Image 1 (cartoon, one colour):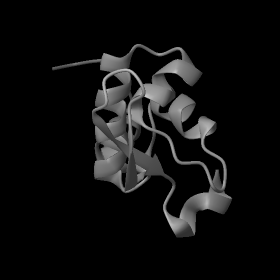
Image 2 (cartoon, helix red, strand yellow):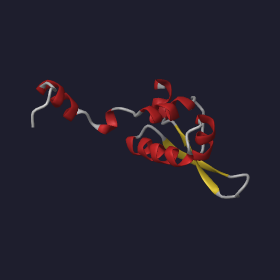
Image 3 (cartoon, rainbow, N blue to C red):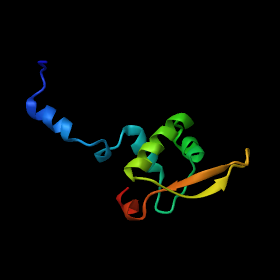
Image 4 (cartoon, helix red, strand yellow):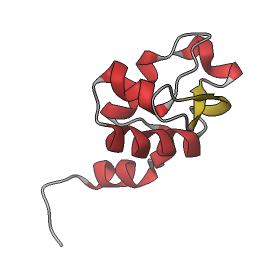
Length: 96
């Protein structure tokens, strides 16, 4: 298939690993976290104004990439259900 894309551009694209870059919503979620911030998915949704269903998908991606880790839990004030808390990994706090 012929395209107007240079061979070097195509090669560069194929060398990228999805773990090497963050999507815009992933970047928005990471921007919320400070050095000692621990938030649930619900809290991330409220702070970022990103719908909860979108936050859950992005958080799962960030967990897989190792950009976020789960640490601890809290009880939701309304439902009483447990919510896992997320934070930046210890070595990455100063990067963001």
